[in-house]
Length: 199
Image (cartoon, rainbow, N blue to C red; front, side, top):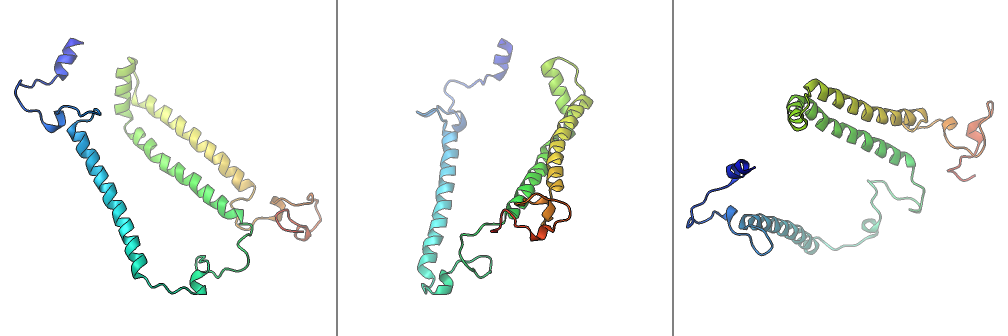
């Protein structure tokens, strides 16, 4: 323990000035180097916020103020607004967005797994040194593969559920949607009233 403390200690002559990074801590426990970093971050944030608000203020003073009904209307991606805005939104948009989000996050999580897979040899050496048991790169890769297969399997179960019940089809079959009547072979489902539409 003493030899480790001796190796890590810094020897400084008595009257030598300390560099700013090793200077005495301030009243709150930060060194002057820490305060310089905090000051630069604060200046950066203030400059960024000032730039945004300055542009907004100049834009409000410079742009023409000519109100008319077309400018006051709701802009919806170039589509003219028709009727009331209190309508039921099609849930298929949400489903497609959520499915994209889930599988996008899955692809993002493959990257750190691939990095860990590639550095399995270094990880095995480090784990062997920490635990005192011999661990090979093959052992680390086995565990990583099982973890990724479990993760990917859970997502495949969700994907199979979405596929089975037609959530991935933009135009869904009437047989997989909720109806006010029970499905009986031989009846025309197009004539039956759907739950999400008024009867």
